[in-house]
Image (cartoon, rainbow, N blue to C red; front, side):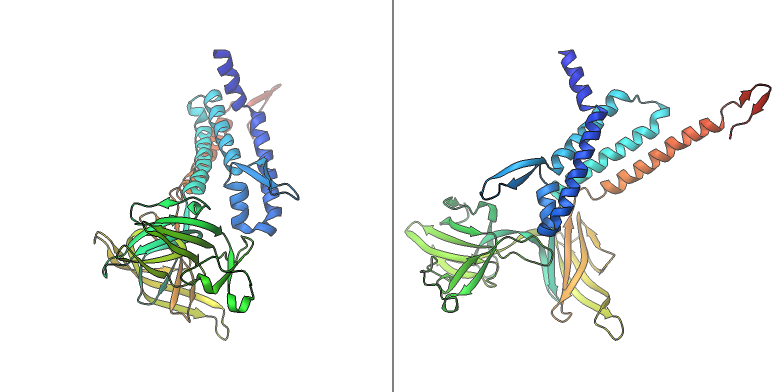
Length: 394
C-alpha cells in the first residue's frame, strides 16, 4: 500500500511529467493559433482552452472524437504536478523561502486561470441618454423568456436557457400554466418573409409572426465582428390543448403577445440577462474626435449608480481605460451608437481577476528574495586561497 502510494506520488511529481505537460501545452497553443483563422478568438478559447478534451470531426461524417487534451486537463495536471513535487521535494526552511513563494505564485496563476474560465461572465449594456438598466446582456448565450404582463406595475419573467430547448423535451415550469415544447432550435438562422423567399413548403409556425416568416438555418460563426442570430420553434400546450406553434428569434425585435388562463403573456428569444443588485443610468456621453477626421480621440460616459438597498447613489465617470468596478463587476467604456445618443459598456464579472496580479507579485518577490539570499552568501564567502596568494571574491 505504501509502496503504491510512493510510486503514485513520484509519478505525479516527476520532472518528466512536467516537461511532457509543458510540451503538450506548447502544441495546444500552436494548434489553437493556426485554427484561430477559422474559429476566431472565442471559438478557439472554447474549443482548446476552456475544455477538458479537444474534439475533432472525422472527415465525411458527423462523428466527433477526442484527439488531444484541452486546457482544463493540462492546467489541472500541471497544478497537481507542481503541488506534489513541491510538497515531496522541498522542505520549509529559510533558504527555500524564495522557492516556496515562487511556486505559490505559480499555483495561484494556474488556479486563477481555472477560476476565470469556469466562472467569468462577459456581457454588454447599451444605454441611451437618460435610460436606466439593471441587467447585463450576454454576448453569446441565449434564453427563452416567457413574461407575464397581467399587472401594469410588475412583470413576472420565466427564463429558460437555450441549452434546454431540446427537441421533444417538454418543459414544465412552476410559474407557467402551460407546457413549453421545443420543436427545433437553430444556433444561427436568418429570417425571410415568405412572400419574398418563394418557399413553397407550408410554415411550421401557426401563430404570431411565424406563418409569415421562413427560417433559413446558417452555420455558427465565432469570428470577431460577426453575430449569430438564434431561432427556435416552440409549441405551448395548456390544459385545453395546444396554444399554437411559435417562431421566436433574436432577429425579431418585439415580443409576441398572447393570452392564457385569463392572463397576458409575452414570448421572446433574447440574449441571456444577468440581473444586477444595482442600476446604471446614463446621464451624459461625450465623444471627441481628432480635428478634421472622424477617428475617435476620446469618449466617456457619466452614469448614475444606484444600489437596490439605497446605500449607494452617486455619479461615476467611465472612461476607455478607467472602468467602473462595483460589487464584483467591471464596466468598460466599449463604444457608442445612435449618433452619440447611446453608450455601450462591456461588463465583466470575474471572481479571480485579482489572482494574476497577486501571483505575478509573489513570483517576482520570490525570485528576488532567492537571488538575494544567494548573492549575500556569495559576497560573504571566504577568500579563495591559491598557493601563497589569496584571491578575494569577485
